[in-house]
Image (cartoon, rainbow, N blue to C red; front, side, top):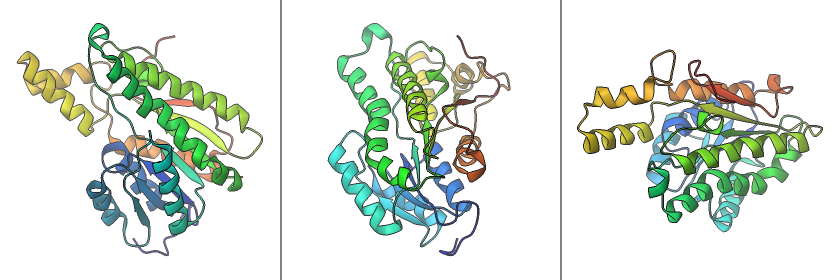
Length: 265
């Protein structure tokens, strides 16, 4: 992709956290294909470089060492991103962790880590980038990648559910605060998605229970009426729609991308 790419997001600078693989990589590529220049933020440089090569020279900036739990690292990463592509107009908070354990075996360290990454990380990065995003209005966008776990409960991931419910609540509160500024704030809530996190979970189930990979996969697909995993591209398409100028009336929403899974409550 050339540096002169055109599209509905041409001239916009998008920053995506957790951009090195899975959903984050798909989102970064979708935004770039729509014309945005994209900062790929994450802790590990190597996978970010792979995504940058796919996007093309001049269209992607790699911001390694971007730890969403470290406000100094965020400040440094944002400064480098601005130097490369100017103020951030579109922020996609995608970085997250999803360890699994029964509640009674969930350590305080695991609980604290998941909330720090999955919830406080969204707070940290959004607060750091918000002055840029407000200055980009109308058209400033914040899209938080939450989860169907932010809309309902799942067993054995209590910390993850708590964090993602928090992300949805934060999304709705900030959307109201910014409603008259031209900035929109939304959450996309994927169901179980074909990512490295799910692949690792399947491996763990096989190792611990002796089930086959197919049986382990069925644990994740049975909640989806379509009987399958969501693809990262399907999530990226939803994020892209929310980032477009034409979505300016959509704010404060938590949009499930889950094949029709019914949410409780």
